[in-house]
Length: 89
Image (cartoon, rainbow, N blue to C red; front, top):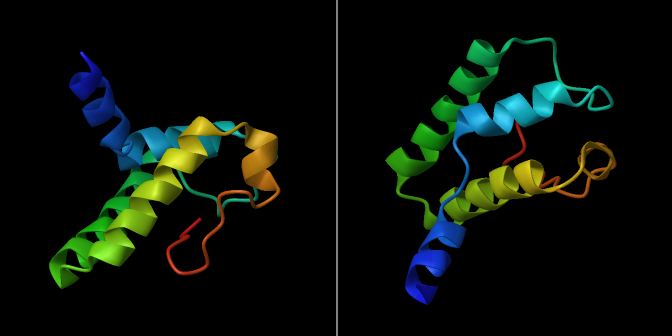
């Protein structure tokens, strides 16, 4: 049971889930985009990091998505999850 819990924690949210969270927050100044555009941009960035086989960027991007999904909109809007190396919104 513990191993299952740990493996669930290790999974980063999908781009779609992350974008839904960002776009649902009225106080986050994200570029005007819809869910499809946001998800596409997020997936493209993720694919670049995977193509480079850059474990550090992949982990940072996964951490960013996890933070955005887990935190309150106000916290995200105030830059709590911001990482200048991988933030695309």
